[in-house]
Image 1 (cartoon, rainbow, N blue to C red):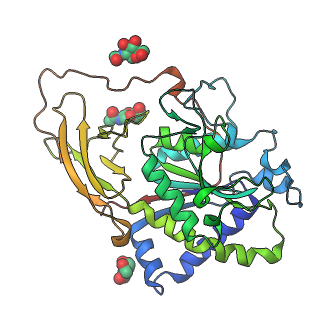
Image 2 (image 1 turned 90 degrees about the vertical axis):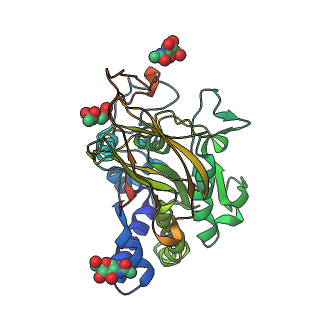
Image 3 (image 1 turned 120 degrees about the vertical axis):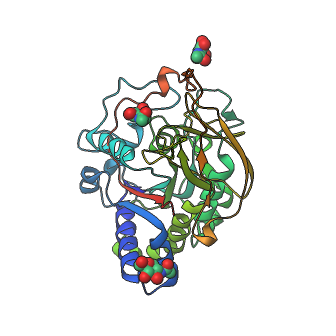
Length: 351
Ligand SMILES: *[C@@H]1O[C@H](CO)[C@@H](O)[C@H](O)[C@H]1NC(C)=O
Ligand SMILES: *[C@@H]1O[C@H](CO)[C@@H](O)[C@H](O)[C@H]1NC(C)=O
Ligand SMILES: *[C@@H]1O[C@H](CO)[C@@H](O)[C@H](O)[C@H]1NC(C)=O
């Protein structure tokens, strides 16, 4: 999913749609990418803010919707309970959208800096807090995703050249270490929607003049395409019961990566885990069945436009079925409602 709350983001995502559709069946890369990937693009998550935007570079007016709410502070937060907060319609729509598809990878586009920022954006001082950063169990993957963007961008990896003079090594940053924020979309997508999301800050000027737009598209085009291709990292597959029927809500855990909410199979019994090349032990559990465990060697999928496929099939149910609730979330981890966002969503096709 690619979503944007920014003026430039809307232009870039419309350009991307145009580029992908125009080059399908003529450009081999675009054709392969489109044949193997479901791409969802939300070119405007905050249409009220877009209309209200000041035309100067530093405006902040356009950040809010008509109700004066910053949508990127309005999602349920993983580290504190903000369930009493009213979810804006836009956020609610995005939260509901996230439930309709097994989104795997996403990015949301912003302006005011030039950097790729990755989760977490928030912390409550638990084990995720390491030094000045709030680190996810999938930190290696997030750093790789952020670097994929910054290195393929025309200038991002050279560090931030904007007004606040903060220097970003390799053009990437942990969200929290830059500045902590509550209710952001990237933490929400990752923690609750199993969708790895990063935040792309794409220009110092929040409302670039028209004559800058072609150059900004050229600067971001290779980075956007390379980022979309990363949806093919890792391993994917289907979980079946002893009769061969897909099992929804089976948990698929990768050893050493204890996600706040375990990743679950979707209604087709499918799961997706973005992982860098290496050896991983995967444990699949579902109440009433003996857990399945397998160690897999994961190659680099993006070059082949497919993640490694590994299916799992449970043996006969154990009897009587001990219903084990493997989830034990604090109240703060339970999402209440959602509001809106602009997005491009990505997920792989299970081939
Ligand atoms: C993409 O899919 C189309 C339609 O199925 C097919 O004709 C074409 O050969 C495929 N190309 C590649 C590169 O996968
Ligand atoms: C899977 O979990 C979702 C969310 O908790 C629930 O709505 C759905 O009914 C569950 N499906 C099955 C088959 O248990
Ligand atoms: C869930 O967590 C709470 C608080 O840490 C603990 O008291 C409780 O025993 C846990 N429940 C299960 C089923 O593990």
